[in-house]
View 1 (cartoon, rainbow, N blue to C red):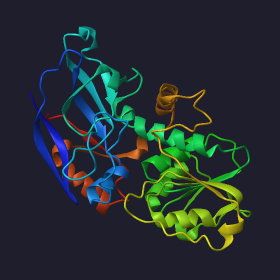
View 2: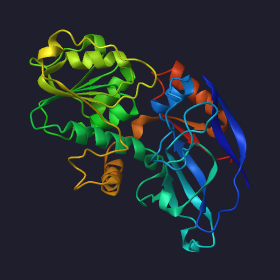
View 3: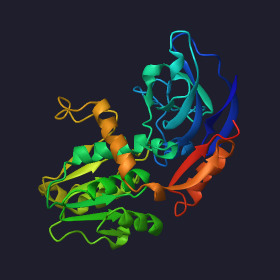
Length: 332
């Protein structure tokens, strides 16, 4: 059976190619994709050619084999329906809605163990945000906000906005969202931020932020994050800068500030929490929040996968319009 897949072929060049998808093997299923979410952070690095090519695409995801050099298929947020099963898989799985960490393509094969069943009460579009919610939960768990603390979140892309929404449920002293795009600042306030400001207008809490999360993807923002963090505060760096270097001013106030800087990436859980938390428990929590939080404003565009190139140009040229883009597969 023929399917269509998105290929990154060169910096700022995307092609949609036909790709043969055979019948499933004995222990496999074939999934027909219903929608998939575009990551405006990681996928833009790949699109621009700013992802390090000596790095594995993602060692924890079976569908993302190889490295990040062109040409490659990429993406990790597909929601689909099982349409065929191999001899060793029960026929009862046919018709099940599933989530897969899989590149953008209309059909694909997978082992049942690689798929996550989508709860009945979670719509397809919400289910496609599962990696976003899981990532935001990981940032919050690594940040460990405490009652009364002042928290600043740099970057209000999709992950930043969901992180802001999660933090808004905590009894904080204040929650400030920072972004260059006015439309995203407005969404952040709608999700519960006490204030949302442009980086140039940021007026840190009187004594500085207790917890700062840098989620903008801009290396320059890390220096700003350090500058607004108080003595003995914490900075959680969730951004992936790819090949872009970060230049930091560590010779002044930082030298005596005892600020801790920690990287956070969703493929691992804080070692202090691994005795009680694993991926399944975090997924369960992610589904709960996907159902409960008012995330509909995040989806700004639904684009047919055949027009994938237009989606990535939108992210580059119209960041004030495009927040979360979803690919649709109606004609596949």
